[in-house]
Length: 80
Length: 381
Image (cartoon, rainbow over all chains, first blue to last red; front, side, top):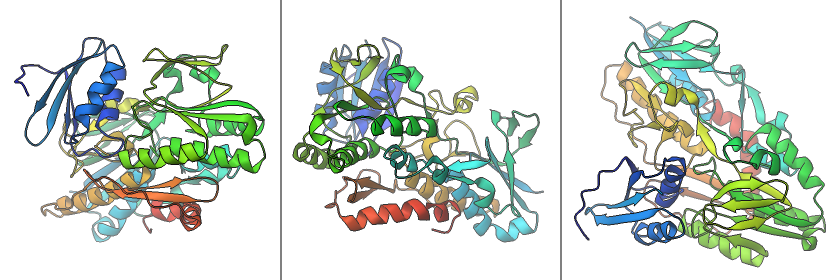
């Protein structure tokens, strides 16, 4: 995991989010966002480390980084 | 000095809250030390889960509505039928559409969410939904006349009310068409925005297995951007095109415009403490139900349980005591698994729900709850 200096435009706190889950929370925010918006998705679900990159790869958006913050992960995504 | 609690919105959250406050603060209300005002932009409350049944001809829209005045104790709660147009959190005042304003000491926003299908180009002309009374009635007629072709259920709105509803619709439709001898001539496709059939993994696994058994096609990674009503096709963010003969969408949703207009939440949802439901952006303001941005579903049970917590916290505050009640994310959702069986899930923040084997008994339980719900709204059940 790398250090990051990304300054997110929006932080989505999806820690302990069961339903519909962190990836859905991210998608909802991404759909409503302007291009070139940097999101930080905070998630305590280990599955997000695979789910989020997999979804981002299907779109024109960019996965910037995944940072292990100990109690949660911060996943940074920039919108196309 | 009378403390004034103002509750905006008389849906599930607002009416449960008003009733819980009536119970908790009865003495203070009767002594005039506390006032509770419930403001709603219409005289009725709607039980939205009924709309799914309206689509299949099993309920009517009238079944889904009750006067708010029948649900709260109007001797102890001032019911104001008007629309709140603004919130001034500095002066602690809400303004009303028909003129006038209400000063508050404590404000609870229970303004909910509404479908906004016009946010997806072509969806209003090309598709149906069951997230409102007109939509459900139009869909009822469309389904009644649909005897062959490709039915597509597409989850477009993120977030949306009732994450179980998309699954329920296709499972009910599958059964319903079979019962009417039409299933062989109808293809059913279910689309979802992420790489599985549902946000919750255990539910996605359960649903995928059932869909395979029932010959319901699942397409994942589908985020529709526009609908072409002439061609009968959905175009997605991922560059896919899906043809349909009958499109049923889970439409985009929006929070009440009041929330963004008053600076309480940029995207229409109020950021709150996940456990106390206190708004992050202003003192003495709470949000419950679909209006609150918490990490669980937009579901009636969430509004119900949150209302109980906020009622307890407000009662403590009003008495000068330290509030201790907290909300742990408790959510309970029935899932209809066909026309005569159902299951349910129950979870809190951070849990992975277990999906029980569907049964006729649970389906009857859901049907019974559809009728008994009004006791919940009245603070009884």
